[in-house]
Length: 183
Image 1 (tube, rainbow, N blue to C red):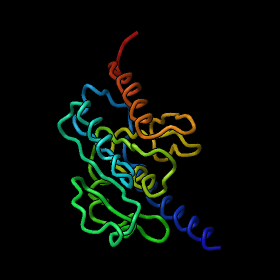
Image 2 (image 1 turned 120 degrees about the vertical axis):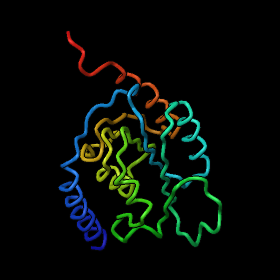
Image 3 (image 1 turned 90 degrees about the vertical axis):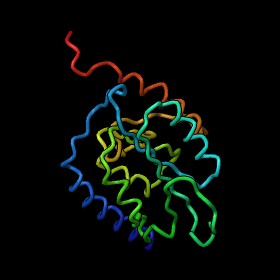
């Protein structure tokens, strides 16, 4: 019963978020014209940030902002020095809605491109993607998740973060052709 109530409450909040987000013009981005990038990722595993940071360096875009979700409580995390914006389970409501100023600022920031570099479904991060003010949102393919992505990448079973990053590096440059190309 609690699982049903949790899903119902999450979906209700998500529907309201999507109504507000309809005003946003999501469109394909020419990577060469991209000035700002947001990178959302599951930072529970310590190696994740290093992988994401190395990928961001290869993008050669100056304005990149990271937001990591650490899937533990603040108490369990302790006093670690974390070099990127993040939030934990302590910042997430019982129905998987993130509620912190850090998340709100990230969601309300206009990015030319927003990447969810998370392998596997994660309702907390999907909520952020759905409500984002980003022009173009990219993430892993999941059935019925087009509410939070404009472009999805299909991974094979067992693929990990480096595989997702490799897919992003392959497909993002394909958007470099000018959108107004005359045939």
